[in-house]
Image (cartoon, helix red, strand yellow):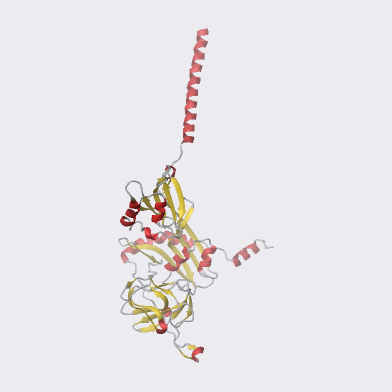
Length: 429
């Protein structure tokens, strides 16, 4: 009997020891997990391996001086400046741009890696360890779809900001509809809907708005859809088309400046008090804007004049084809030369006050068959239509996008909110 109970006791001790070992093993594993550090990389480097110095470029800073201050030998600096100009031009580091220097952890604390942030996403790495190299890279970006809408009360930019939308979306919308909507003549009650993607770094740091993917604009009661579609995959050509596959682009922009105002229209019967109310025809359209505002070529063409003359001041004239020419007067400075080919949207100069002018503006003149005409009344020629063989794919491509736009509601206006509150018995104190 004693032998029996002795065997039972021995078995219990063995099981208890085994359980204790297993428990201890689990505890040890948990402790190891707690001790182990998760390696977090930034810009592709484990910052735990370096002494990290972060700063921004200040007035008077240069790449060479920053490197010399951090114990980098002059031959390495010279090699970067000469052999990697295309990747990193050391002369073009800009004040205010962030940079990071990864230093050695020894007493010398010499710079081993220099990271220059070109913008929120793109950066340049100069690796000074061993053989010197330089390369560009991008932070990992997360794209989040954003659907927004608005009703214009005073201006497009105000309606955009009221919805908490990135201001750059204002510019993007104006570019999408630059040929079909005169943004100087927006009306109260005009509406828009827009679909685009917002960019985030590390899931939380906002990095800007991407291009507009789909949009809807109701201007003066006229609905205009816009869908981004790649019409030429070889050349990466993306244009905006409406729901019937019509190209929204025209051969000419409606205006040579963004978000300005028309201070004087084309008027052949204009009379000026200063000249005794004598007939002084105005054969241009004046767009008032602050000095230095960029002036854009409204269409592709060749510069035929870039000079200064009399009341015109500094100006540029462009021949677009055998039918059309344009001219841009009173510039502060020109940005093109005679004989130069320019593309639509290129900056050809800046708003100024040269010549006969009472304030900063550009006088935009438009010729058709050698005769000056009013560009605002011209039926501007369309751009290349969408190829017939692409239309079936296009209509399939936009189907879901159009449905999404149609289902997007507009925000409530002040009047609608008041009415809704009254219906629900809510009154403001």
